[in-house]
Image (cartoon, rainbow, N blue to C red; front, top):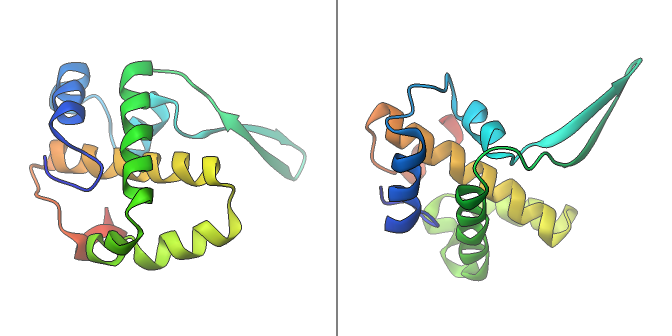
Length: 129
């Protein structure tokens, strides 16, 4: 796999953990399995999103978070990789740690899509995966 923030270590750890990715129906299921989505508390008509659930493979979750931090450090490459507008808007409204986890979840979903569907990374298709 070749995507921003996803290198050979994350790729090999991901294949070792999930194989071809057939166990997950969609990328969000994979991100939830990793524990990169917030816990949800619902009462009546109110939904409260809490901290990340931290379930699943701790090593792989840590690797995706470190990959997201590496992408965030290279601000000039955001538009080239297709993250430009989304990361600019998110960095203005989110705390830095929340932004890292949100980007890690996005990277996990992209990586699952590339693995399960046999695609290469394409920055133009970023919003459609």
